Length: 209
Image (cartoon, rainbow, N blue to C red; front, side, top):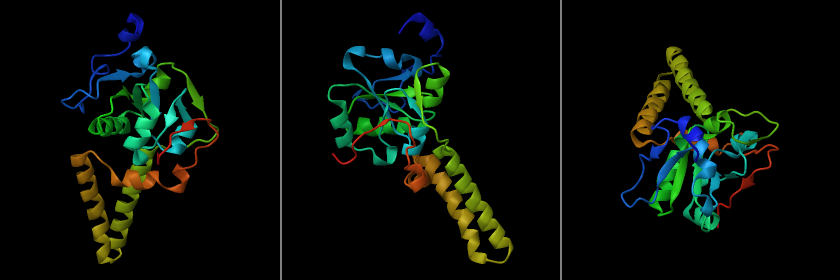
């Protein structure tokens, strides 16, 4: 990486992963500006862990798609074949989870901080589809807020059991924050509208190797 690229990123954006295990299997976390220059001899492969619909709308050029809810050790091992894996998502959250999962399987990998948003903002090449989609993060917020609102309205109308709906959602959000997982995101990610990849000609990785 040249000095110009380094100057565009703070120490917080180029550093060690918070999910790095003690054996060091998940090494440096890289920014989007570093991705194409990181260990070039290993021919890095960019693995996008967003839903097929998000991947189909816009993606880092040459990225391949393996949704987080379908991530498996066999698929990663079949894909790596001596290459360095660079995980990417929309903003970096889901790719962090993929990084930790890969480390638990003993597969070396890195995370592109800031995700596809930072990749595109940094002027790196992207490919686009024709269909606009809503990010999974926005879908989760809308679904959670909608359930709370619906449950509250029904409770005000005298439907007593509806009080359990916002209670359930609230407990789910607390659990999500404590465990750094999101069951609602996993469910929404499998919905039909999130499985349509659009016309962006990305590559899908195998999920049942």
